[in-house]
Image (cartoon, rainbow, N blue to C red; front, top):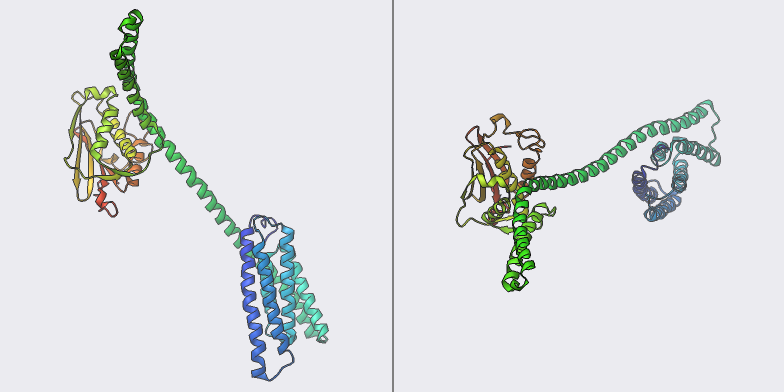
Length: 448
């Protein structure tokens, strides 16, 4: 592990210590097994008791190391404490390995290659300089074992072997460090990408909510003139009545109060309707009748002055099945579709808006159709994409249809479009019926 990245890769460092712990359990068990089996295979060798005790010591030490690991907070632990623990563990392992090596043949032992494995461990859990230091310490411990067991190299071949052994340890550290640094950097980059993706997903969700709210405010802005008229009328009536009372106080009676309260209720109803449009919280999903949502949407849109010149043809199915929905969300979808239709009918001499509900094959369907100019066939696949609009510049944001499609699909339904340029344009909303909501059939693929 590199010195400049160790503070960024502590979770990975904890994993590396965990791998060493697991291998140490295996090693301790194998040492005990070898100590038990050797007397049966080879008689009673000199070190069989020592091997059993050494294996037990490895297991006990590993249990202690594991307890320390579990008590450590790897996100907060300092570099000094991590290095101290790594040195303690690797020195213990090297002493154990040296004992086993000289009990099983010294320079001719089959366990000699395990020194290289420990250099890999050092590269995993220590900075580069410390890993090279562990390689030198390993060579020193091996040399101490040669002196203790009277196997100090006396010939040229033996000295060459020692030099090659020390060089091999250093080379193992060099290669392992290069590989482990690359692996750590890849893993670190992956973790950074995953964290960045989470942040981006949160931002996208927030932007989507902001887009929905923006589209609602756009819709509400289009209703401003009608709303001003709707509020101005009861205010004018109240003002006139108050002027009369100011001139003739004797005419103040219960009927006058009732008239004033009636006008106040008209204003309250208008304000509540607008608040419902602008409210960012769509609420909980419930079972509702799509016909009721159509009626409430039209009641809201009656404030739009353009509705007065459009012939509205309502064809609502009798006994329409209920559907699970967030009524405000579906009302927002219908509001967007109807306002789009009103924009398209602005220059038409005989504008007609048809709203039809039906039930087919487990779906409840509402079709919003106008006799406006429509859109070309090559635009059919593009109109549901964000910021794509067929309206004149300044007349549309290109967000209404994508947001409406997303809202409908969140209900398990679909929103599609049909158009015959110069004749009609239809937008079809499909929602699963209440009894079919768990597994509705796939809607026809009319528009992607």
